[in-house]
Image (cartoon, rainbow, N blue to C red):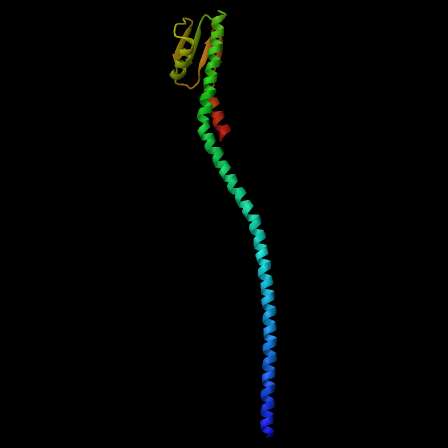
Length: 168
């Protein structure tokens, strides 16, 4: 009977020890899960802050690239238009200088040298029947006007280069 009582005591002791170990183990697991959950939440908060910082920076960088590309595209489209407009204004200014010289009768001889396209524009504005005006075609982009000893030049070539540089 003693053996049976000892065996029963041993069995009860073993069950109590197992129950205590299981309870301790369950508590440790709960603590570890709570720590793990807190670490996950902290990491999620850090990632949220990183994303909150990275997204606006990425958007700003993308916007900057888009603006640069857009500015470059607009400059490429507008450069010829602006250049042509500036050239037309220069031709108009040269025509006015020639008209002024002709109106006050100071010019005995006016020589206009330049590309055919600009000479045609000047002829159509001034007229072809002016004996004091001589037109000479050249291969340069510039128009030169010589009124007696005074030389006026359009400088289209350097203007076009300056415009291209400014718009790039």
